[in-house]
Image (cartoon, rainbow, N blue to C red; front, side):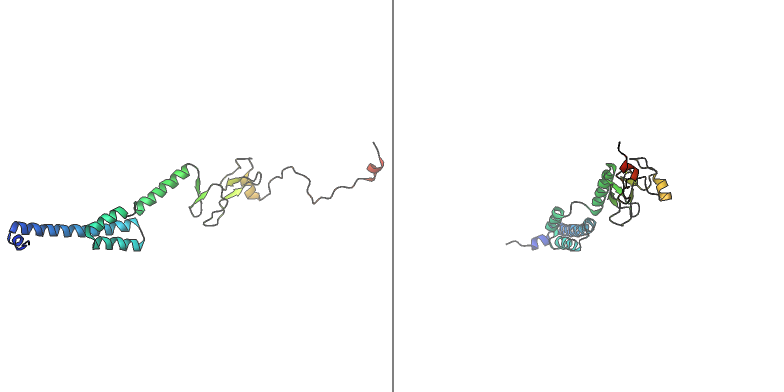
Length: 180
């Protein structure tokens, strides 16, 4: 059997064991503190935060290894910046525009914002294309949109079949009697 009294009588070994114990205890406390700081930067899920901290406290170094292997890959800030980069790239490619009222991303062809329900774009009275509300003329047909807003006049009607409201004219008596 080992006699531990030998280790306690030998002062260099005793001091080395004390130093190792203090070092391991300090590393354990620092790992708990690091996990505490890191998990709050990676998730808002309270249950996951508590589980991560408890695992590192209960299983000192194995818990730290488990945490490092199973923690969320990105911090919330990294995720937010990645989403922002993706939005910027999509916007540069022309897939997105912003609602002028709530500043949320909406598709280019939306007339109304699905978030704040405000009108984003108008349709051209001349050609029925979707146009930006700030345009002065329709880029498709050249219709003066500013004049239409000021005067509130309807767009010029396109040539079409006669309206159903007008009754057909009856032939005059002369046209019945005259033959050509």
